[in-house]
Amino acid sequence: MTGRPSRAVIVGASAAGLAAAETLRRSGHTGTITLVGGESAAPYDRPPLSKEILSGAWTPARLALRTPADLDALGLDTRYGHEAIHLDLAARIVSLSDGSEVAFDGLIVATGARPRRLPGTPAHVLRTLDDALALKERLGPGRTLAVVGAGFLGSEVAAVAAGLGTHVTLLEPAPVPLAHAVGQDVGRFLAQAHLDHGVDLRTGAAVAEVVPGGVRLSEGEVVKAETVLVAIGSQPSTEWLAGSGLVVEDGLVCNEFSAAAPGVFGAGDVARWHNPLFGTSMRVEHRTNAAEQGMAAARNLLGAERPYAPVPYFWSDQYGMKIRAYGYLRGHDEVRIAEGSFADRKFTAVYRTGGHLTGVLAVSMPPKSMLAWRQAIAARVSWHDAVTDVLLGLRARAAAEGRDRLADSVVSMPA
Image (tube, rainbow, N blue to C red; front, side, top):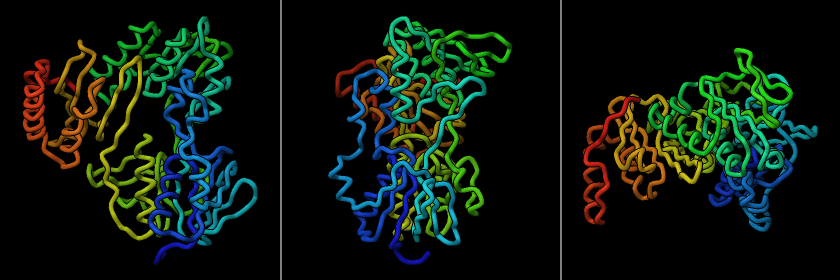
């Protein structure tokens, strides 16, 4: 495709798709924008589903990403409640589940991901508002819940359910939850939080299937529970791209510009793109990346030709702890505690991959304490310079503020 598109189609009506639509309009696109969404609702926020919605702190109305007036001002051709089922790349046509077709000369794929499931009796998953409301009805004092998977989603649900008085059994096949992402010691710290709040955490427990009244482990034991939530990760929603000619390998494969083909871009959970900042291909399933990549894809669709090279960010709320992380933590070679301690339940951990600082994770620390680390990651500062210069700056700031609990030295931990 050459020139600016006159007919833009965005498949996926959530954070990434909405950000793309808004960016197209702000950037001067005056042609049509068709926004296709499989759910009947207008774009809404998903992270609160496992926290504020499940706990009852929010009503569903608070999830809306924009007011009806804001959406009307964008002048969108909305196709809510109709999934994309086929892409004819040569003809530049997207076929929808209601039998209609939408023509385009610019396409942004933002179809997100769907939860993985287990064989056996149908169980709860958590991806949509309907999922959250259905699960919420099953929680409360005297109720029993088995959560399969102790990743961030499963851990958040376990924390909320336990806080509501539900007896929670949390099943995780790995010896240490989240160790592959955050490291063994940080993973053990997060696991201890479950135990401290009465959750029956069972590691090394592989679930074979869901059965009536619970789940069956691979060795045959049945763990009983009235309700089962399966939180074992997700699969990018790319089935509708089969036969289109686009490359799909654990997501829609895109280059550093988030482009999958001329005039076709990916954004959000569905996109696997080459991040030049880290020199690797990644697919990021976090809210901030969805919005940022939606904006980047829209700009590049209009001809900006700017590489999408973010420092990924995510957060999680568990048992009153605010967990924040920047960078790419997976595949790290070393983890060190830079500030605080496990004993204080407040700390900052930094991550090395090769010779560079590639990630930082903080638990219940002030947001500003992470900024210097994030800047160092974005600047591709070497590991040596980062742990030297950034820590010196943090110590100087702590001294100026009269704080004496900053770590006197960087404590090395095994990854």
